[in-house]
Image: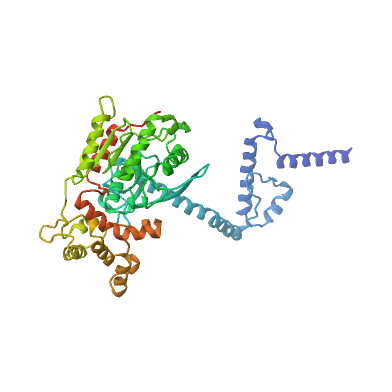
Length: 505
């Protein structure tokens, strides 16, 4: 029976080793497949590997004590990889190497993440505590910098038109001027649709002297800009060619771009911001037609519905009727248009209809020696010296009276003289001067008032237009008869915000 007892003892030893290798945790009441048991195995595995790591590999102790490898507890690796670090100094060196390869990159990654997080926190604190100043975005040369987006919108069947978009984006200057960054407005305070007159590009709103003033004022109030191109850009607005197209593409723009940006809490339906309209000359007449059609059939136009409008240097058509809040801007030199506007208002804007306001410009304005330096005060290309030189040319060619600084006659009747002046200071001429100079880099030369980023967004024909409109527009404004003007536009925007709440039709 002795052999049987030995076999029994051997079986018990094997069972004990197996139990050590795969503990059931019976006493702890934890099952083999429990998560806690796996962590327990991982802990025992780690202890076993560390004991093995810091041992010197000398088996003499085992001989002295009479123990052998069978007495060691065998622990399988579950939560940690089964790595052999080695014994003694080699093992310690291997541990250091693995630590450097794994934990040092993790530490550096954590450092950079915390650094980015800290910058975000600082910026948010600056915004919450009040910035040192809020201003329009400027490029490295200080020029007003419009981030213009151009999109070709299409709608079946056969409606296609390029649309120019400018989201309100403010440059926030931290206290003390130490930090400057852009604060993007996801859902604008309002949308301003711009419609230019005959012979003008839609893009000229962003580079002409008066247009960029208006756009700057609007974006600083958190209002987004949308400008549609005409069916013939240098032609006039034509209802037959443009009316239905603008309606369909404006509705598509609202549903595709504003619905997500202005979505309500938890992805609920969007609450669209108020939509305002501005039109000059032919564009003003077109805005009147749109407003009249929106009144007749709001369901057909919704959500493209004007909350308020500004019609410049144009009287509404007699058959157009609307009741939304409206500002009419007329020039004091155009008495005929002023009378027609007043007659339409007397007939249409009666009690119970939307409020209205008539703004009349201040009259003819002088062109002083430093006039253009003030107009382009953000563009160091237009120095006092160049502004004075332009004034001298205008006086020499009989466009401006050198004694009173007033424009002699309607600049539209002095095209040859005006053309010779702007060509003297156009992009090509000033680049030639820069190439001959050692102090100016030709790559820094651009049309007056046009930033490098905006310049990249413009087409060739628009850049050519920007080369001349800076002079033509300012002379027409000074003559004060028929030209787009930023005079009084701040009052227009305040009127919009006060009276033009979002329409819910």
